[in-house]
Picture 1 (tube, each protein chain N blue to C red):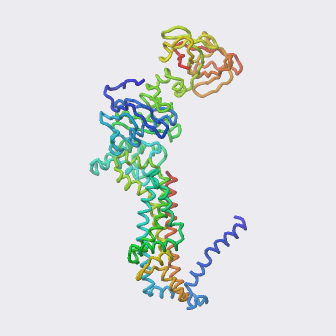
Picture 2 (cartoon, each protein chain N blue to C red):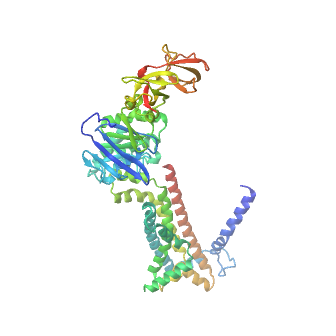
Length: 261
Length: 364
């Protein structure tokens, strides 16, 4: 690596991660004032753990993320299978477009349109509506990841299973699904973190008693940043990092087994 | 065209007028073929000749547009792949990468109503059959190519099919392993008495394996018969060239009929055996005389052709020479090493002879 490359890499990484690093460092700040360093302390993590409303929001977020990622994983896999296996069915192009639209649509528009829909069908806003909203864009991501794996899958493996007497259902559950499992897990984890992160869409479609963690943090920041928020954000970053690293590890391992074939 | 099956009168498998088109492309064109119980048959042809499509129709992965396929009198076409009493070994082996060798072998045995100990027993006997004892817990990605090939074969045999379909079973192996495996494949087939239908594009492999070779070209069967018949008495230039190296000398038929006919060529009249297609053809019909390189004799007493030696290649067990005739035609002559004249230099004049029964007259 040349000196120039080293410098640009450092600058690039710094640009991306310096703010996050500052936040993490200041979450261990002993001072009440966010911008003044008062020595190392973990006391804000203690405060955080006794902050009932914040913990309740974290629980809401986890629930929403788990449920919406599960729904997205199932729907996304079915969508990927339909696109990969059913040739050129009527409306295939439109289906592909609609599947990927929530991924590229501005969140404000997705949120607003879902809100109008829920109001229109007179559905009470709460955890279920956030789950539905998050599942809509999660489905697209799962479909992309699982679809890529399906494309690389040797169809003769499934044919061999059928040839050995397995019914289509048995082929799916004993061969197709296990082979898709790594990409399915990666898709699930991605949908999970995207749901955990989302502020905009959740703000539109949530109702009383369904405040997610990003919504709680955002409303607290409007009243003034305190070190407790830094601590909460640090924990959020840590959990998202773990999940994302897990997802990429799964997809690397998936590629490893493909190469061995 | 179809030779009667040599072993029994009632065939195990009957393919009758099967046709399959993909768009405008006729992949398999009105193919009829019988297979006897216990027969080892090779479908041979260049890629795209329809042999793999035919195999996939037998396994149930493609549906014919027309025709009938029956196994022991039972119609197969209406049955989905998992209900057909035939099994297939795939070119890519298609082993289940997430299962151990033992689980791969047991996969086809589940759903047959066998209890656990019977399945374990059967898996063990399959492992013995393909000499892979001790490998039951390995994953396919921890096996060598040859071992994977044997697992694929054992897995396809697990359900004791009457008919086993093999798609290029040795295509992924290197040369030495391939020759060794050919012998093993034949031994296993003889021992089990299962009918094998192998698809291959390699004529040497087809000749080494099969009781009967069926040559396909552009979706049709062009000739079927034992290897020797196809090699020595091919029905067309295509079959002659597919089965091995061949010299072709163009000419026209002279009047006559019978066991051998005379062909008028640039080098004078040549006597050779006519193929059925030209046996009673009129004189002046354009034909070629097909001569296998090993049938040409060098410096023989009864000289038929003369030319100049242009190249000598030593191939270990034989020597191959290229001889240019007066009009520029280059013939290849191959001599077994014991008895090779050996002392011919490039540029020297050479005389060539062949027995009349060695030449084979084919339509041009």
